[in-house]
Length: 135
Image (tube, rainbow, N blue to C red):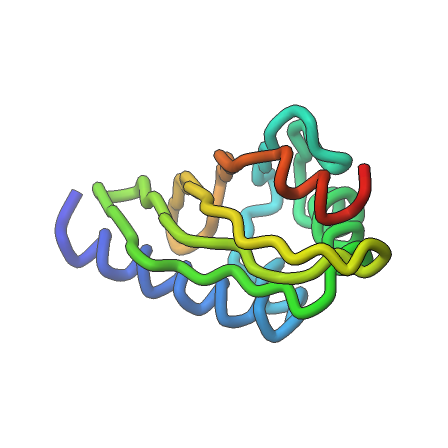
């Protein structure tokens, strides 16, 4: 894969994180393939593998937005190798019901084909997420 492909993929994800942080979920969905596979780690209320943009919004994004206020995903670094990109960063926000702050590092691994995310896997400390929402 060319460096140009890696650069385009990082730019795509930068736009996706900006849109998510602005709660512009439609723009995030627009960069997902119709058969995207999205995996959240065990131990989270929204854990599991979800397929398709609508399932991701229903089973991951909506619960996360409902359970947290001021949630932002701050990426410190992208590591790109062609069609695979790793985003390293921190999730910050506050549990709506508990008032507990979250400051939780993550690694997000993406596969991208033809300008669309086809696969996502999150690696994070699930205890911190659960603590912030009181689960």
